[in-house]
Figure 1 (spheres, rainbow, N blue to C red):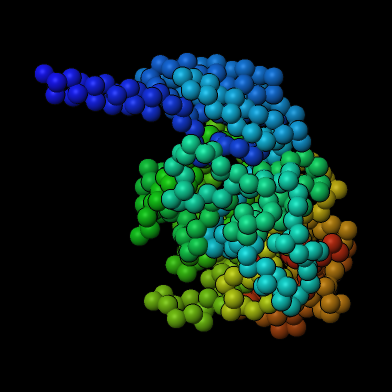
Figure 2: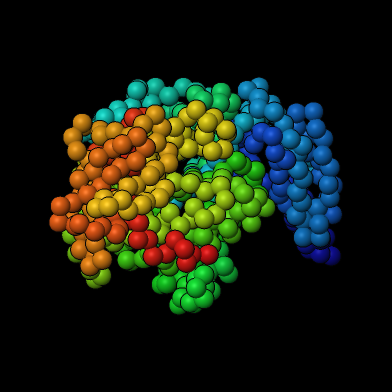
Length: 487
């Protein structure tokens, strides 16, 4: 009899403990102390609790209430708020209470991709030894002290909820050491232009192909070109669909943010992909926007840097034109609204280096892009010359450009490099290139009747063709076979 009482008491304590644990509010890792909430948008706050538990969320004078569903899931949306440097608390109440501290309101961006986006601030020594210009103005790794820039490092095995709610940090000291250099310098430059708190989320994995970043259910389809031709089914092409989406992206959804920065493609370029990558990229952009319920969310990406793919020992042989064809595939994403790209052909010391160190300048250029296209600062020049159209005039080809800034020029004062033209036989030769207003006039003595032109159509391209703001021209070919077929 005494034994039965002991068993009953033990079971009662166990049930009471189980109830207390199950009744605790659990928040996703991304919602925690020091976070930045997106200004001027409804802000999602969500988590789990006991089934049918009543939940309230109080922040900045708002007090939102909801009830968890039968599975214990709950979510609310805070009303739109203006940016604020004032650190405030958020109180989340149910059967238990959570108080999150030091929360700011400003602009939130996600940066994702592979190693060049993951490239951490701890590699600062490579910045200091860079041969070309664009030196960082100061030693940010050791001197960064802006508590209004906050960072969240998304690690695959780190995204499970925890009771400490310590996901976010100020961008300084030890937390900054492991954070994306591109992401940090984007935030630093954007802060100088907007003067509001900036929150950066970094979710990047070295060596990753694009397929693991796409939800597996979205990948298995056969693209159809505008001419009716059906390409082979994409599926995963040997990659692991959804691997990083499931563990790193999905746990962030639906955290409210302004836009996405993407720097990825080297692993797919090694596979000699072009149009197939374009459709995977389109799938990623559209599916992420749909998951965040924001079909026009800004999505900005980095054109891959020059690299000698053709010299690498690989089971697939690579030509010197493989990388330009990949650039072309990346640019097909510009068919989607609110997408754009930056060129970095000038940010390489050696085309044998797959990881050039000019990450501060890449972050700055992405900030220029966002400043102009997202935040309406039209006086900010964000890109070098972009091919617009061509016309044949006698024995020359005249190329017209957009994004000319305050004018076209040569970086070193010498004749423009990496322009080629060809006649109907398709044999390209170097072209004489002369700047006239916002056009470039191309000619070659051995091509009396030119029909096509190319610029920077080589993996080693580091042209001197820029606008007067110092931004490099974007490589192109006027005989692009995909632009009118892609949909």
